[in-house]
Amino acid sequence: SGVGEAADGDAVYTGARVKISNSKITDNQECGVILDEGGSVELEHVTVSRNKCGVGFSGAGSLLANNSVFADLEMGAVAIKKGCENIAKVRGSGNKGLTIPKNK
Image 1: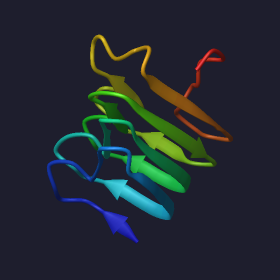
Image 2 (image 1 turned 180 degrees about the vertical axis):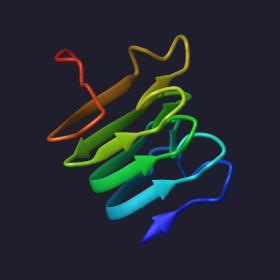
Image 3 (image 1 turned 90 degrees about the vertical axis):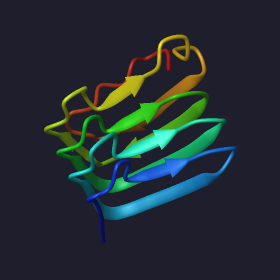
């Protein structure tokens, strides 16, 4: 399945938990996924490409990405709003185009 042709691909807010697997999130005007208000997204075997950014944090949130590909993203795989660096959590393994800091 695929998500595209929208401002944002998927928006996850207010504590919602979303799992996306075996999909493509492409060609969105903004980020492929937006996280805010404590939302959580898990990406498993997902290609995120040709968006402004892969996953954007506009507030608290959590990203778990495994075996996914992040490519052709203007702002990079992850964009974190200034001031949200300590409340954005990024974890995962086996990804291409996404570097996860060891302390996150």
